[in-house]
Image (cartoon, rainbow, N blue to C red; front, side):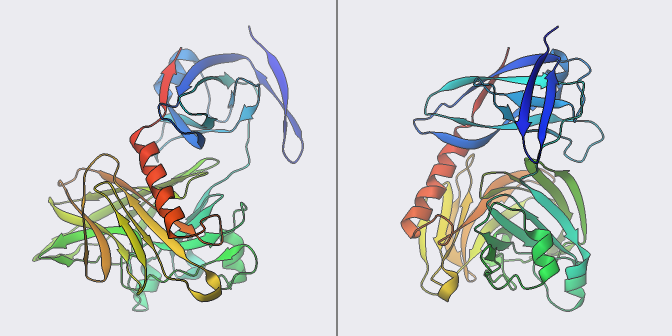
Length: 366
């Protein structure tokens, strides 16, 4: 039986023991380096290689022997669905990683977080080490403020700030960690989707129920449901599933509607903004907002082609959905005060994200 002892430095020195392991080969198939990207291994494969493996008693080692955090994903189900961990690989490189089973409980500091915020009119807020977002809930709608667009919380700290910012209640002012300088209103905000019928966006209302599916240390995911609302001459029912991994600015958004129809994901336009559009992504760079800098928004459709257009005060990516079938795309944001110098830099970041999403890491179990 293999038994390897090593130390992990966090708040204190912790020793984990590797009693059994499995080897995963991960290949980067593109001509550019990748950093902090998620590898996903199905739980059935973990169980086959490590019978009796238990969530909370697993960790990952790279070839140098460094410990990598991992997370067992349930996707809101009773049983584990997969195991995820993050890697950094040079262009066209392959590296082997060991998934280890331990007799001891294993915990890692979380880089993501999300929660229902009843103290602020039922917001749902989520974040990672780079950026934060939020959606608006039923208590806010009861006041007459209706919006199902995506809001952005810009950060220039790797700390998780949602709880502290809500506690302080002054997150529209930058005190050195970032702020909420994005204005959503009755729009799609930063890349939400809506039915698009008769050349019109049919905006939904605030979410009515939420369910947290996973919550760290690498991925936060949750589900929002919406009351029926009018889209054209008929009503539609919508469900949104959103996930955000550490070390990326882009959310994975899955929309499920109860009818087949044209839809559009959109970015609200401001006067004087810049844009870049292809058949697989739409990027927008907002005009400067005084001392708060510039915000960039990008929507990516790695598996389908979309038609971009300007209408209803939005830059839209038009596509279509099938009734009760999931439709997945990505949306995220950058900031001129957190590593994105200008519009060209943001457009390049969106393009790089598209290339990586279109060419996922290749995983082989042995």
